[in-house]
Length: 103
Image (tube, rainbow, N blue to C red):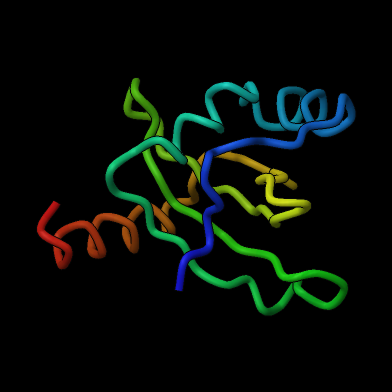
């Protein structure tokens, strides 16, 4: 199953960009970096998918920052809903997944 559309395109609005930077100190370009990486862990966010299908992704930026992103696909574009640093629990899960994937 392919979740990420190609070619890679993002749908941002000013409110989302500002919110993610103000709350979590993550800029839009830093969040977009994750989707260009060789290894991403993508999963369905069934708990928050009532109105539209949402996904979560764990990944690492070029500078090594580990981020957790919630996104949806709208009109063939990735729309990031929220992005923040991974929690301690998420980091442990991400590292286990990477080891099992032999990355």
